[in-house]
Length: 435
Ligand SMILES: [Zn+2]
Image (cartoon, rainbow, N blue to C red; front, side, top):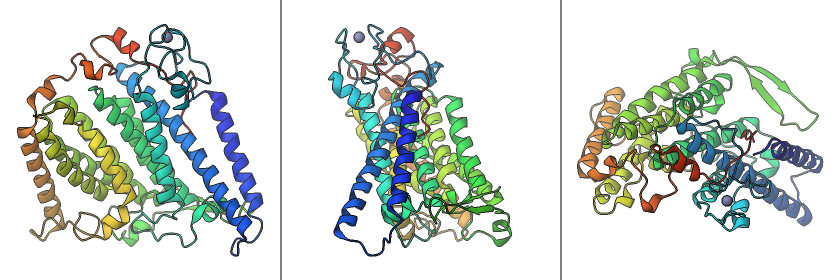
């Protein structure tokens, strides 16, 4: 995403905000037909804007997943045809649309451009829009513990901006983007670079420390009073734009502890799940994915995602013996399980048959919650051991080797020249996904 494009995206968001605030000056309780239509239009416009932001970030993630493991700079060189090195024009560099305009081929030399790039862009755009409706516009109906907003929809969440909900939404979008990058790197059979892990975890620790509401489920439920007292905050209310413009900053010991407990729990879950992997690089990427999930969603959600991952991975590992395409990299399963966790979080927490902050129902014995957690993690590790036994031994031998014919778009770490050729397009010099 170029600097100019980013500025224009920000400007359009500002115009949208000002327009919606001007439109919301009237009463919104009793709506005429025209007003209802206006709300629908505003809803579609909002969804389109979030889709554009998501696709742009997907475009950036393509570059992150490709360049970071190879130690290349993210900003340069500019997006170009991998074959003839012709730089892509602004129009051709648009997420998804650029690829469609080119019909998947370079304008100059007709070299094919991998469909993986527009697919990832569309996928991330899809994440943003799905979460927009399920989490943001629903008033946080999917979030456990936190009471959902009684007034939801584009009017009450975007016009009268609910900053706590908007913060949660972007925090979770950041989580899904990170997991997408880790998943893509795992698909390429590369090692997840330390810089990506440290940045991802740092964001997941620092933001909740300032803004404890980013963790709807505290590390200890309910949060002890003495700890909740350390959530000191400074509040201000701005009546220029809307009555709902309220923000709080401060340093919260509770938020920091939630993140750190989440990170520790995530690493434990990662260690248990990664037993299923034969290869050290794969085990590393699984642990990274769980560290990120734990830091962003808390240790309870990490346990839930680990349980789902272990249950889903087992049949795939077994079937990979017969069809190697079924050997789905575990971080991809983790990303999918995390999306499901986010979309159904409240429902999962309320159901008695699934591990959550309400308890670990799989383990009736022993009575002690810590021992129960240990028993569950041991069960996950045993499932992993079984999965490792039944998985195809050939899959791990392929790691780091040349890409096969069926995956010719995968970068090859043994041969940087062919890896460069595998990169069709990405953001240009100033590509920073801050939307
Ligand atoms: Zn070309």
